[in-house]
Length: 537
Image (cartoon, rainbow, N blue to C red; front, side, top):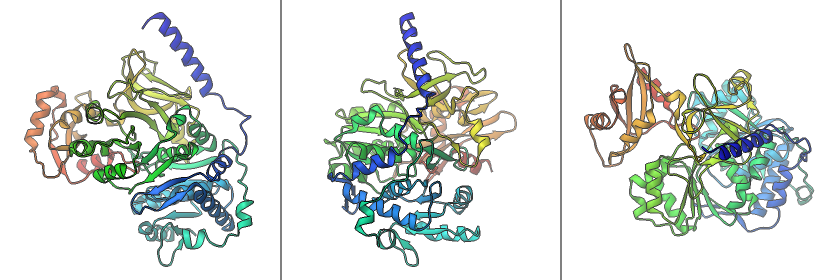
């Protein structure tokens, strides 16, 4: 790198660090909720469409319904700072409930609606919500768990279910026009907690990540938001993901239209919705994109309206991004990177980015790569842990100060647990998770590299490589394979494939397991710890 470039990078670095550490005490006290009400109360066209039913919500509908929800919550005795749970799939009403909670200064705690009894108990004990909004399929288990914990919990369903209060029939009824028109948001402070969202849960039960009104405000007013004007969106991540919440705020901030899609892995169904509603921006996780590629669906659907695909939640590998660019030359495929704890998307590609990268650092974010042993900052093309400072970073984990402290280094940088490097152009590339490395005879083996080789087999839809204990070698790599429907391959063929293309320490000495489905975290990532627990025991 030239001296001039180094000097310029140093100046930019210092500027970002200064801005990252800067908290503006002059921020208006009630900026976010009032801003939202102003936007959605302006009589603009429809903002949301349920792709499955065709039901439409206008901005006016969203404004009135969210205010009614806020009024009902106040009548239930909900006060600023109280925690309200939102445990739901993708539907039109989920975001308006979140807005209603925020209007009165309460905190919205989002959950995955596919809760196991263990996870339901964990969240109820951890955050102690006063009310939980959910869907009918989850209501009974939540009520039963609350009863076992001797909690006085009100469960409200967003659809309809006998013996439960519902959104349309109870929450949104009984409010006169005057109180709706005269409604005023609670005056929040910038550091008041707006959201408690689950972390990815890749290393165990999800942590409850606290994000402030200031954090949401920063993301809603990011420079990147202006680029979203005029788009028709499909955003697969639900509001249980921080990304789903942020993108929903960004949609309304630019007066865009959002198509609400079913919360499932029906890849072809998503393409049909893109064609039907002339969607221009499609945001999803890599697993859906891999299904589109492996099932050859992009030969069937050309998607002329589509302008951008945003891949988030996990890393989209180079070989898949290359195929997407080839099949959809008119579409900008954007590989981005963020994490719940940072409160924002931290990096994103440009149209000229190298395939497989996670792009460049975004404004108001600062990134460094540190040596895993010495923790010294590294230069270009050297691999280490990626660490972040951002103005939107979490306040910490709810009721977990010890883990919060461990998540930051002594200089206040957030430890991501991701291994990465940046090249001479400043473009960043992910390598793996620190916690995912397999230790074979004191050698760090990257599962991602083995998975890349396995994914080249035409019968493999998804490959996950984990380490299983070994008395002599510490750990042996083992592959867990999800096959494409109607395709087959033998264990020996896959073992030979890796042996032929990888070094000796990467051989699948732990064998190959074929499964019908892979466990996932609440944010859609592969639950590697759960797989390790299953096959270790």
